[in-house]
Amino acid sequence: MILLIGDGMGLGHIQAAMVANRGQLHMAQMKHVGFSLTASASPGNTDSGAGGSAIATGHKSYNGSISVDTSGNRLLRLPELLARVGKVSGILSTGDASDATPAAFYASNIDRNASIAITEALIENKDVKILAGELPGPYREKERKDELEKKLNQAGYQVVDNLTELKNAKSEKTVAYFNEQDMVAVKDGRGTILKELLATSISKLHGMGSGFFIMAEGAQIDYGGHARDLNYVVTEALDFDQAVGEALRYADQNGETLVVVTADHETGALSLLDADVKTGSIQASFASNDHSSMMVPVMAYGPWAQNFLGYYQNTELFKKIAQVLGAIQQ
Image (cartoon, rainbow, N blue to C red):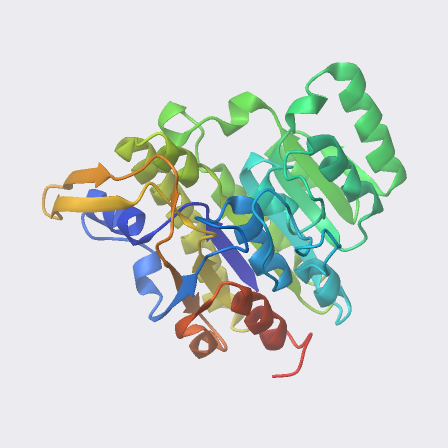
């Protein structure tokens, strides 16, 4: 299974990208569409910690935490559960690898900002075979980075810092920590790294175990929403859609792969006031620079795609994914 999370991506973001691309999106090929309700256990709007954790664990929690319950107790995460039925996992992001959404799938902490503790939780992780994202901030000092790499090596991970090395890595477990320049915004020259990371991870995980689970995050759609920057949102959503296209191509080729595309929450309360597909022009308004309470779409393609129709809480995504992959009974 391939789960693609557009961080902060609501219907407005998707339609803006579709209009800018003259009506064409890979996401538009996904005919099974449901809606996820994203409220957390905290008052007000969810954050990525609680939103990502709901998908990763099937439980609501407070904002500011990752994969713990409302009492701070560690929760079982999807990669752990899926490992029990022989599935291997990869976690990919175009943001900081210790940030809330990717971290929710490999670590548990009452503080989503505890970057060091979250990063080093990977040392004890036996279920995630590939982790890729920007090098977490605390490790940009060489001595600390070298010490982390030594610990990860001892835990069986090969540590690389570019796509070529990731493709050529021989270890069963690999961490790819990219530098800041590699993970700038698309509008500043990043390129299609998420699509390439996904293709590489599929190639490496295919045939390892009895199937795989990959979570790939388009992290910077959210950044554009916070900045109220329509160009930022659209370019990141189109980049994310390229990764969706890669997933759909593999699903068609493989025949046994489910692709699910969703978001952890919506950011910016984006409204389209005018949208001309013929010219690609958009007039839009952000009602906020923060997360909103709007539900987000869930698009599915492949075997069991019909299971994702309807309206449901974001916690149901965990259960639906686990059921499809045989980790819990239907």
